[in-house]
Image (tube, rainbow, N blue to C red; front, side, top):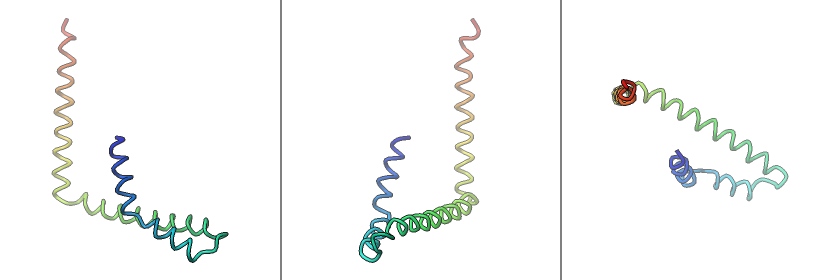
Length: 94
């Protein structure tokens, strides 16, 4: 779980437009309005990214590839759960 967090933070650092916005704010925006500008910019970027991801996810979930992948994942999880239950029941016979 922590490796996913580190990977996404690493990728987010390279594929972020926040440094550009910070530079633009430093050059163009007066100091007393900079915090408000950055907060507003973060809200706009977050809304855009969330909307884009949501639209992509709703499209992707309808594709045959992901449907087959989810089906395989579910079958594998069910088989693993059944095998684990059988292993636990071996000791119950005594």
